View 1 (cartoon, rainbow, N blue to C red):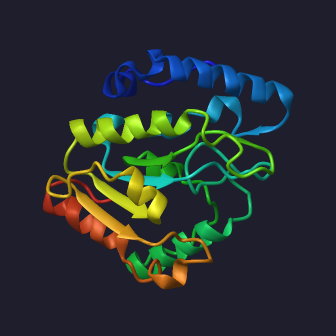
View 2 (cartoon, rainbow, N blue to C red):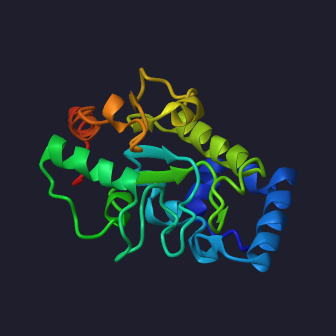
Length: 220
């Protein structure tokens, strides 16, 4: 696994890539890719960073681990490749976008268009074994992505954090709500979406906040 991540993100995150746990993580992930199907494709492991310039960062959305079905994961949380059927959580996200800001449900579930506008779509765990949810949890990815969130919280302000579910909310507990916009609700999965995700209006709230501090809103 070659760690190819932009110099800007490397500078932001600091020496995380040089720590012993990260070397162990790289070794584990390389072994896993050698043993059988692992998602996303190796070139897409750090794609959330490739697609979002840290200098343009406006919104952080946190997921747990990649989709584990064939052809789904593309390196951005909640996102799927063009032509792939929308997973249930993504369907619910698009329903809320449509209800909140009037954007029709798109033909593709590929969220590159969000990332390229400054939305970091960050999974807590960046790889997964095929058909085995959370199979790469507890191996070091969480420590790395914690460090990413902490670095953003420390170095950036005026960022919108959309924290869906208790897992994301715990991960971003370090964020200062006085210097940023912190939006919290339940996870968009079918198990919880009706308990507060629908009607949360996070997408319009994010844009209202961005405009209030003189930044361009996101075209959701």
